[in-house]
Image 1 (cartoon, protein in one colour):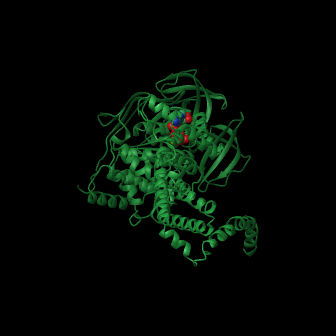
Image 2: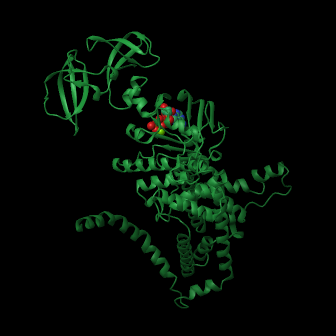
Length: 359
Length: 277
Ligand SMILES: Nc1ncnc2c1ncn2[C@@H]1O[C@H](COP(=O)(O)OP(=O)(O)OP(=O)(O)O)[C@@H](O)[C@H]1O
Ligand SMILES: [Mg+2]
């Protein structure tokens, strides 16, 4: 391998109208999604939104109630998990409690009946990869949470899976450890470019790790895109609220033309034009989205507001601004001490930073 | 610290005293009888060692106990597995099915078996009716009868620990094994069985020890043809009034059991995994 060349391992994964219901509960509505070979996709969404269900369908732990699933060109819809060559990292790791670290990691190779020397070589290499050299003989119950997480990862990686699936693997770790393991995961992905689906609750984690993020709600993927796409061009208020902070003011769309909407925003007492999310129809419930860092304080001419609350966040300060209509907005700016509670200010924003989204 | 120790001692005292007075003291008294023969301190043990009957009975008792343990565990496995997979009403029903016999005295259950296993009892009539056999089978007053009765009484003691171990097996471990490419046999042999093993061994040990000392069931179902150690010890007392022999026989049994337990604890992972989450 030439230095710097990126080794690409893994196959693409495709859901074609795949759905799963349990009785009346539609855990996953019919879903089309393609994860390219070598891509890192994060599933982000609230509890019960169907993230684990999607992962289980990919892994083969459950069969879809409709639709098909492909790994590479192969239709795996009805293929049991053991024939799919996937690596799964469970939320609670699911390490075999009666085995040592080495035996856990070697498991997938032993059941493939590889030669003992080959197993030893690969286990040693993968333990080095996750920085667990010297821990091989320990029982897995004698490890810290972060170490167990890395054993689970090593166990999944050692079989050289076509697709790597991780279900909230860092859920049990404290914030500091999460941060360092996140960076580790990113390094591993950059080295090996293995097709990966990663489930998390944590938007920051999603942004740090992934090529693309899929935001899920109620068993449906609301939007898939790069972190920048989701942040700058959310398709609806839910996605906007889930990625980053947002101000959402109720708006009435009166006309749409050329990707711009004309909208009445009653709480501002005015009508304005802004970019609009695709698919929105006039008359549909909608909101004006402005990110707090885009709210400019002291802008003339502007909307008058009163500082209701000041929250210092270190280098940034969050301001809660009450409009004359009683509605409130958050603004963020570099900390300065010229404002205090009750100060009257005028606020505004650049037109390109406002967006109309369906609610 | 010292205060806690006093409190702990006070709290433990009633239980310790109770056990001491009602269990340890009588046992020590019984065993001391073993050394009171007029022929010398260890004379009774000499008598036992030379007795052909005693040796045969001892051997037979262990063989029967082993066979009973094996059969019980084999029968307990599917029941425990079913229990571990059932939910709600069906689980409750099955659990009561397993525990129900505890509400009926062993004596009553044993007498019921006598009626069922009789020469002209329902089981023999059924077998003959089905043409399985033309002669009535000898099911009573031999080792077969003893084993049938003992397996029936001891089954719950094997099912419960086994069920507990099976219920504790995390389903995700089986999924993990499956996802790593293991076939059903590999998953069973490498993950499920090792995790259930402590419960299996616990149950088996329980059944084995209980069947070594079983009295009522072998006495009624085995009779004079299938004498076990407990029956022999009882007959030392009731027929021959040889208290020292009975005490020596009991002591030997206890020592053998303790030795077996020590070996088992050494060899088998009795505690490993049993308390692990
Ligand atoms: N075995 C099941 N039987 C019935 N309903 C189920 C089952 N598994 C999941 N569900 C339902 O399907 C929906 C999606 O569940 P899923 O586990 O995929 O959510 P999730 O996004 O992983 O949530 P979390 O973040 O809490 O793990 C939920 O409403 C859940 O109650
Ligand atoms: Mg989940």
